[in-house]
Length: 220
Image (tube, rainbow, N blue to C red):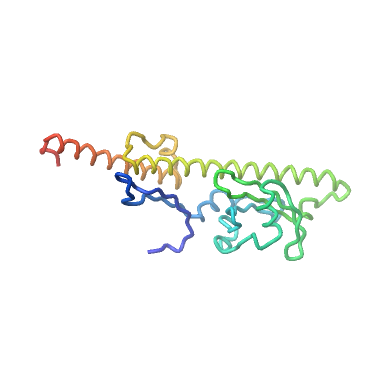
């Protein structure tokens, strides 16, 4: 039964003698991305980061009702991010002038964006508008790089798990999940430990089958 939570999944086919006999898959809640990397990040007073996929569908946003519901490709700022991949863009939303900085995560085509009202970025010292503008741009770039780094690590872990699933699907059980992943106290650590348990179980089955094939019927 469904949990009511939005998730993204990774999966690979299980093959035997060239034929697909099953699928190995894992998933993670999109809400967890928000809790880990989005919820506590603030730009100026009301600015925030968000993550969208390569087609503009919202994957992570402070307002969780937007996740898997809001398509930013329908807006000028979303079209700009999808077309430019890396950069910044001025736009108006609900009567408020905003500045958005964005960067594509090349491994998966997602893009990380940070947006904030221009007035907030320049508030307080209008006479130093130019300098505050530069500071605001630099701040957005730094925050974008930080979130991009974090998302990149997430994608790296997921890519590694997909590769591991691929190895398991062709019968390669020699590889263990890395200690770094197993020691994590988060969703990725839980997923890694589940993978390791699956690998250990498959190894035991393989060892049992080999023993029986060699004539040892004492195994149970």
